[in-house]
Length: 268
Image 1: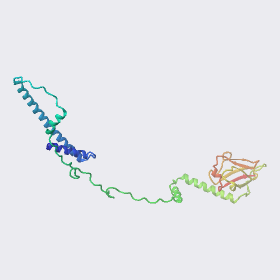
Image 2: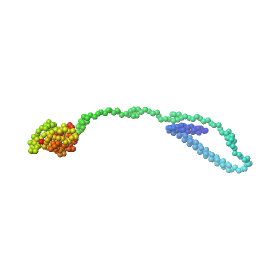
Image 3: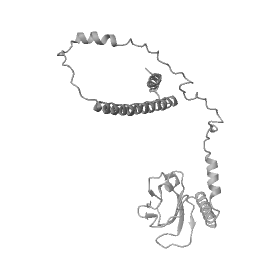
Image 4: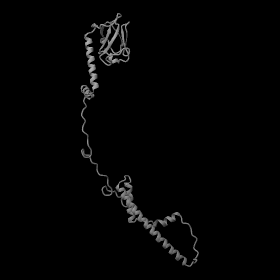
């Protein structure tokens, strides 16, 4: 085996060992292997060209030689396998012991990636600041905030003033429960005496028809919640013969709930 053939074999073995991972050494060995292949192919092409030229020269010489018939030889015979083996065996050279395979060395024949590094906090990555514990909402502060955000318009001030006046009237009516008020009007059928009746203790948010003391007609109805002053036939109806008053669906349930105030002003 020629030196170049040995070198080629060595590179082929290295390439086979390195085939398990594609790294820089793999491509370097592959490049060397390809260059040697190119050199060998160039030499083979040269030898082929030389052989063709020599063959042509020999053919030219043969054509110039006069053909002569020699003496007839003896009939040939086909040798047996044993005879062929005895003739060929002495011609076979002794086998040449090959060199041990070469183990590639890390850092010389191939290289791995660099050792991993532990990232540094503040340089390679950053943590956010720990969040603070949440606090329960303060209902009082929320109400104060809403009130402070309400527009201070003339309409709101006017509504507050009217509600304050109505509340004052209701408080006065409570103090004068069943107090007789003489109006000086009415007729022979009734209506000359005006009284008030407090329904507040009877309110529960579901009952809408209430019994009243005997009356001639309802003068007015006052609530502590919206709509405050009720409209006859729209917000309420009454039946003088049965001494009852009925609130319509125009009045919300929460305005007739327990804790609210309802004052009925009627005439006898």
